[in-house]
Length: 199
Length: 199
DNA sequence: ACACTATAGGAACCTCGGTTCCGTTTCCCG
DNA sequence: CGGGAAACGGAACCGAGGTTCCTATAGTGT
Image (cartoon, rainbow over all chains, first blue to last red; front, side, top):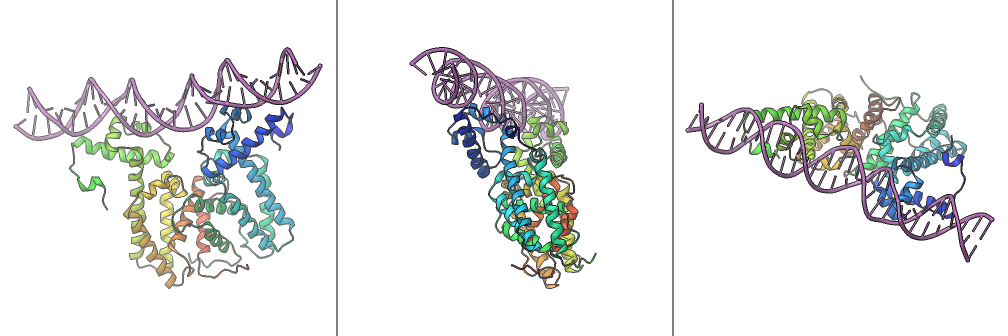
């Protein structure tokens, strides 16, 4: 599942490629900091480029955001794959991935907003990357469970929910809202011990 | 800390009061279902009223939303207070409140969006209700801790974070995202057992 | 019943931000 | 070096949605 760009990559003029890169990078800076509501004009300005040029490279704001989001998901995939191949104990691998991915999201307002529910249409348009991530996560959980490091009823959806929930501690800055603490609580919650729930 | 309306309540004409009620109710229906992005025109239409009238009763969209939010927070406060006075075991009271409040949020898109981070300015404008809720929650936690029903390092902020995080399972409808399951995981996580965290 | 004012109604206004359009500039190739 | 296509710049366009404003209407007190 490649990008259209990947497929029929007939690299246009030299300055075009240069601008494409530059735009992507500046867009990342702007949107990561200000979220999806940042304006196209600002991206263009930061990239030292006219809006027209911006739109020549990305037909729509959504397309630009989607591209940025896709790159992040690729990082998630990488993190997960690396952990799986690292040979470290399954429980540690599991925790390491959650922490690493959280760290990525913490620096990217777009990710946060998408995971939190607004901009869900972006997530929907991701395609294969999404499934790939799911598969790898399933493997990660499975190993951790076999090692007795996480509760046996944990599913990939559970992990997804928790990670998405974790993002709220990043988007909100109420006093005492610290996502590392939040993550710590979550990790404790998925541990192997069976709960004592009375009812 | 009363509303301006509460304070200098000089009930105007009869139809005015009627419309005020009607608008509030219809606004609740519209915004609860569609979130903060629902349009003022739609609220007016649903209430069988012109936009002008709508704006006569609420000077601004934000004011209207704030009013709706405040009412919800009052419900949270009520739930908590009732649980504290119910005489049931502290651990159960604690869980009951989280479930009850979650149930309320689950039916209100505005709450969800506010708690999740967008619309945080609304939360900030709440005033005394916020502090009141915090105080009650602290008491709730304290009792549960003394009863040995929840981990001893749990703070009101922690509960806040978790509840906010829980909202993402309501705003997102990815397959497998079920807020009741999410809440169950969280409740297990705050239990009294000390975790086995290796690192 | 009447006048007087509070209230309703809804077209029009204004701002904001994504997108388009087209004249100008820059690169590339012969 | 010159011609032509590719790329650029940014003013102008446009729809969306909150808010205003002014005329019509309908309670209310005498």
